[in-house]
Length: 147
Image (cartoon, rainbow, N blue to C red):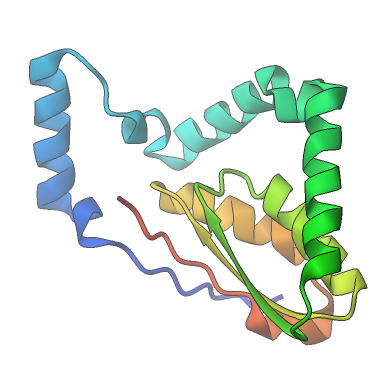
């Protein structure tokens, strides 16, 4: 595994803009969702909460729906090269399931996880690295394309 991950940060996450958003949240007494997982510690807590309560982890019908969708998508993708972009990638489990199916179909895959938190992007990247074969890992990219 590469020891370095290239991460792109959208200007909305530059310090002055994050401060502006935080002040707006405090003034409105409504926490902007991005502050739920702003740090590595918060990201870990969010992912633990998601693991316990998310239907994608605990509802067999929901899991089956994703599985069927990914199988159908992988079967209909004809190009030999596929770039998967995970918008709101979270921990990357759903994206990784699709990547695994595409890899098994001998597709040359690249992956760009995108989320509001760079820590979340790095978790998704790590999750994807577990199923992307060594020869295809060079294609894996990580971007924190935050909004």
